[in-house]
Length: 246
Image (cartoon, rainbow, N blue to C red):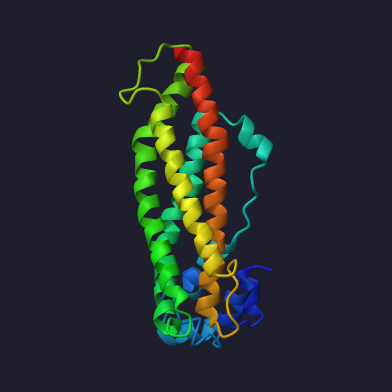
């Protein structure tokens, strides 16, 4: 059932978020309180605040559209430059778009529920640290490692010679990226422990539940992202370098 169909069947915004937590990002963008005032209809809110309901419904549909996953076999056979672009456009974009609303959700639930659930403060600090480190990590990949891998791919396809990289062998930046992957993986294992594997407590409000759902989604995307780099992109790039440079 699409979001537009759900609206026509008079689902409240709270019910819409409960059905698909990604809708929360759209409501937050437009300043619509789906938590404390989640019992309202989107049509009523749009009418009261003079919001364009069609635009919001389109954003909701886009946010919740199903994405057909790429098979593991397809990843294994994907060209190096294509896999680099996939990682950038899918996983790097996801991280950059997810960090601001995630920090906002976690800050809010820590402020409101932190006294009863003191672990929320550590969860916020852990995610903030992860967000900062991943932001720097992606810049290094996009400015140093990924361009080098794409040069290898181009040389491999054309048969042209390639000059040594200024940083030496490809294993040098790859080793650094793998170390950083390990640190962020461990950080999320700690978040999973603190959240009881992203299970909200019985007294959790809608924002609390959405925050935990998004944390789990973020972890799943991060682990897929790391898998694609550590286990497919990096080994294939190193093998290509070996063939080209000896």
